[in-house]
Image (cartoon, rainbow, N blue to C red):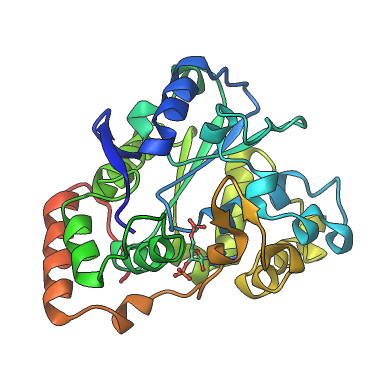
Length: 291
Ligand code: A3P
C-alpha cells in the first residue's frame, strides 16, 4: 500500500497518528519507573516488548501460566500514541511499559526529565526494508494499491516510510545512547538473534532488574528466551488471528523471524545503492550493522 504519510517534525508520520503523536508529546507525564520500548517499525518491537515484559514481571508469573501465553505483546506493552485516541488503555501496574515509534527528538520532555528508561531496537536496514515491504503490503489500506518492491525501495532510499527517514530515527537514539548510556540502551535485532542470553542479561541490568545467581542457576534467562522466541510466540493461539489497534492483524507480526532474508529479495543494484546510502548516512557515527 502507498502509505499515507505527512512530514511532521522532520519525520514521516502516518496521517492516522499525527494528532496522537502531538498529544503524546504535549500531555504525557512520565514516571521515574516507566519503561519505553522504542523502535523503528519492523525491527523487532514485538520481540523486545515480550522480553521486557517477561524480565520486569518475572516475580509475578510462573512461566507455565504467563500472560504472554494468552496475550499478544502489544496488548501487554501498549503503543503509547494510540492511547490518545482511546483505542488502548494505560497500563495500571508498575513499572508501566510502553511502546513507541516516535523519533527521539519528538519524545515528550517529561521522559527526559525523569528517571524513566528507554530501550531501543533497530535492525539492519536491508532486512528492515524487506520486512516492512511485506508487512505494509499485507495490511493494504484500501483503496491504496500495492507497491512493487522496486517502487517501495525507491521510497525507502528517500527515507519515505512510516517514522522515517530510518537513518535519522536510528541515529537519534544512537547518539542519545552514547551521550546518556543510563537513559537509553541501544539494541540490534541481529545481536539479540546472535546471543540472546547476553542481551537479555544486559537489558535486565539496564532496567534495574538484574538476574540473581540463583535465577541464573535455575535457568530463568533461558526460560524467558524460550517464552519469547519466534517459534513459541508465532504458534500461540492468541497470535494467530485477531485485530489489535484498529487494523493490524496479530498474525502479521510474526512472519519469518530470521536475519538475512533480504538476500532473497535484493538485486545487485539495490544492494549497491543501499550500501552506499548507509555509508553516507552513518559515516563516522560509529553505528554499523551485520548484514
Ligand atoms: P520478519 O518480517 O523479517 O519475519 P516488529 O515487531 O517491529 O513489527 O518487527 C517484526 C519483525 O520481527 C518480523 O520480521 C517478525 O517476524 C519478527 N519477529 C516477531 N516476533 C519475533 C520473535 N519473537 N523473535 C524474533 N523475531 C520476531
